[in-house]
Length: 155
Image 1: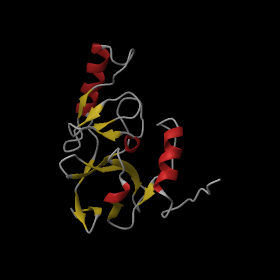
Image 2: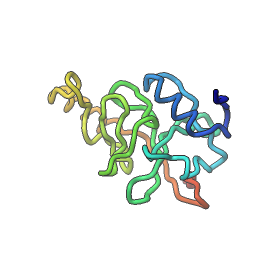
Image 3: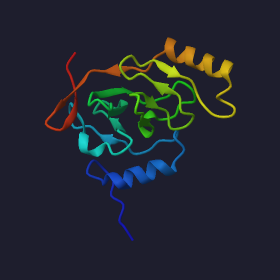
């Protein structure tokens, strides 16, 4: 039986398993930033994005695009408040919501495709949600790579 560790040094597999069990709107245990250092790139995994809580208590979805560009955006989907850090980065370079697969451009914070699925993929509904996601984009934070970490940039 494996022992579950909590806190900033917990094992990635433990946190990934735990957040995969929770509905994507419930609180989880985000990675804790260390000052301006948000997350080590090696901790991103196959989804290329994780939830990170800054020292001032702000939750971000932090990850890397397929071209190697790091990003940090607000962690809450505009559709039904799912935690975007539990989603994934698509091969097209969008952040995909883990619940209904709405996609965001992490450079602008705007929703580029609305929710998908039998109910939420209904074109007029999806277009309305996408319009809201464009009018009220995700917050974006300036980040850079430094010594294998994704770090906040001043300003």
